Image (cartoon, rainbow, N blue to C red; front, side, top):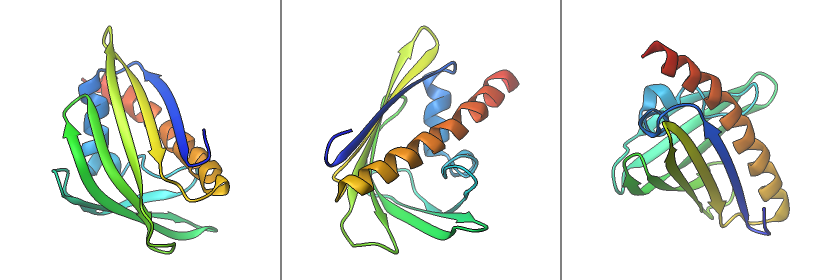
Length: 147
């Protein structure tokens, strides 16, 4: 982490195509794209250059949080870039870049969320992304073994 960015890496025992699908198919995204006890609801999702996305994250005691943005780059199984903003926050958007690398059938993922407005936003988003990726791992395991 730096003053305006989160950078996380994970290695998943699933092929890059499966990880890519979890980031670019609304049905799969809706199973993991919210940290902790929050539940994701995909409200809009057009994974194409310039396409919009919008996800509500709901928790019993934490209320609703809606994140949204547009897709800026889609390089299947390799790289995904999208903007990120909160409906309830400032209009300032940030940028998320997800990079996937094949490692003998596993996937090394690097996620960079840049342009965050403050150190507290960096810390909050680092915790949020860690929680999301924690949910992604068992979904990938389930999908991998179901193939």
